[in-house]
Length: 209
Image 1 (cartoon, rainbow, N blue to C red):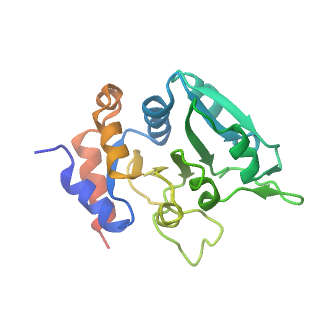
Image 2: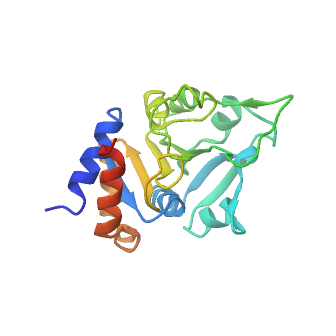
């Protein structure tokens, strides 16, 4: 039987908008797998305002470049609109990446392109929501969630399982069945896979009270 089948079924049950799901060993690994499979030797289009440091000195640009992808930075720190992304997308584009800056906030004269706008560009849109909120929550109206991003047209949503979700350390990948299947079959997926105890803990988190 496929490792973690029941945990993946529980994850999809919580996010019905995801046609498929895959689990790796942490949130950064989810991004690395997505970037490697989609954009190694190609470009990732990303806003300058979303080039974040994710903790312990690990910076997102360094993480993404390590996969063999090239970063195509667009917009500015405080304002990036859909036209900025559209001008950068071309034959060499592997994906568009949107990253939720969960550990800081820019206020004032700001503009951020929405996932629905980016989904119209004709390339896969990957949204890293970070915290692992699977569906909208009334107490967290400003926090992005997987269901909303998928409905807006994201091809893939990545998140951590050990933050707002409250589960074990792991990385979640949710989205298009063909794309998630490609990620799950990628050689790197073997190196990033989770152990059975983590899958059991994730399933218990998803199905518990």
